[in-house]
Image (tube, rainbow, N blue to C red):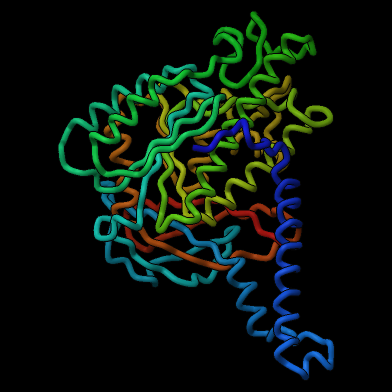
Length: 409
């Protein structure tokens, strides 16, 4: 069990990452110093000189290359939407910012032949939905589990996230065990909405006339603070789930069930309207990097609409209709649950009527896919956004994979 209340929420992940990096750097320096002392004790020559032997150029280049390597899980389907097999390396082309990039390696993965290398985590979001999505999930997933007595093709665990904390069950292929865990989670308390639906349309704070409410009254600030807290708790839970996969062998499919987190741009933390936009950018960089590093694909399913700006390509809260052009403005939309899922190479289904059908589509991703790796570019600035596109030289195919990474200097 992981309790979010016992862990501080990182409001500015980049800063938190820097602080964490400083701690690890210090520990690494201490360890390296200890190794150097031990080596000096065994080597009189090095003791006399008092100098460390520099790392060979080849070793430095190998370490740098490993830190820049990005691994993509690529889905390739034919006109019948069935996974394609037997593709060769020469069939693939990878574009980085629309320019051809050298592919380091390509491997076809048969998930059914190596089910231990793939696992699924189904997230029950009790932070943002007020309980309705979990009610639908209990009913639909219960039907799905009762369709057969055969074990599931891949291990499945359930994660329950709420304002009270975070709990995850042990992975299992036993349908009865999973159904029991689901029944227990469904009885737990759910969070309440920050504001009735008639006062908040989509992710936009509005007044009774349907126009954006830009007053700074206590009621508006209270709503914004509540939504901001729900966003922070949701991201903290997602971050924990992704990082947990680093010690688990193989690919992970993370299915988030619920409408997703609310988005507040103009009333968030930081000085002025741009303060929260910068926070969204930091969160996006951190999550996308972690998804790549831990081989996680995010999928999303909702029985209603997702929390998302109603008018796409516009700021979340604004009186004008300018198309977002800065990285921070674009992050407002990309950090929304369905967009984040698609950026990771996953799928998002809203107003879903059949959980079994959607779940089957998610599972097709691990039945057969291609693992494609390449070396990221060197960014001219920190967190430089790069687009990724993978093409396959076959007629009528559809290719889906992660579409973004952030290059570093």
